[in-house]
Length: 146
Image (cartoon, rainbow, N blue to C red; front, side, top):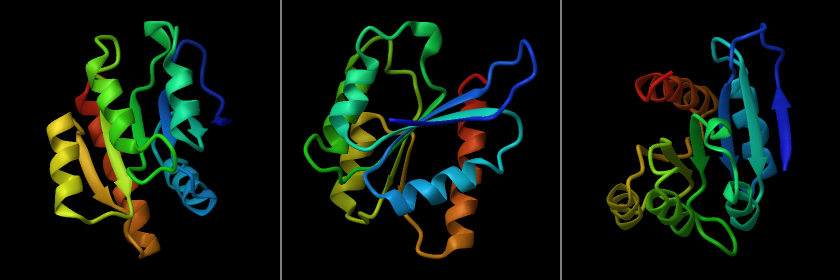
């Protein structure tokens, strides 16, 4: 796990963003894109599904993330399995999960939607579009109670 926390003023809780992705290049771009968000944010990165699921075991409700950015095509425990776990856990099911993946398969999009993903986004190849997609996720967090 790696973390990136920007300094926040006293009393203001930063956005908590959890990223599960196995691509170092994509993680770097994701961090750069999140750095453009207004306000403070804390980004935690997990490189595989096992780390992400272990992170949620016995985690207090007040420390849950405001957004999860989840790769669908992870090695080992796949994004589908993680999403299913999150949406089946009472304390975790209301966290918005955006699937951010190289897959453009309609079956993957349908399955993610059935499991409760807030968004299914195929990773853009264009850097400007990549940053715009991440910028659009700020609205998702604001809609869900921030």
